[in-house]
Image (cartoon, rainbow, N blue to C red; front, side, top):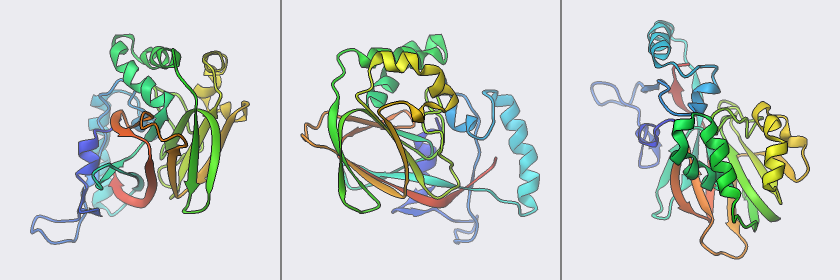
Length: 252
């Protein structure tokens, strides 16, 4: 993941921070990645491996291209917080089981990327499926019964290489939403190889769609459905997510 403090530092008062050394709004700061996390999944989306030394060398070389005026911009995902502020992130938001699994995985980091599989299996223990409703692009509410997990991706990977939202692209101006309904622990095990290679969208009870914005609520409004983004706990449903197209300049 990318530290949420770094990404949120690109924004102030719900607008991108664009300043130069004189304090004038002319030039933007660029985001570079030095992968030091357990999964480094956002870096993986750009074909980078988990080697910080290679990353530093890459950033230094790419700076020459940037000096010549060649720029790359990526989309940023936004979610509302309980205090009315916006939270910005770049990779994947997780709701319900997948959010709990990420929290559990932190306990097993000594096992490397396997910690995410262990965390998911622990998350299934005692997990209760819930009925959700969603509103896409400010349209009508739609009911999704017996939801196990819901993922909203700006990029493809989470969980140390699981291609959980395989159609996501951080430069296509949309979010990819994947919903797993009545998905049991044995479904996870039997389809784990498909989750890693991104071919699991054809599995029963798995749906996917592209959106610009999505509101997610639990029908019973229990206030107990976990939400996280890029490894950071964001509280509980309800939440609204939307895309900011080409919001950050990135060295990639």
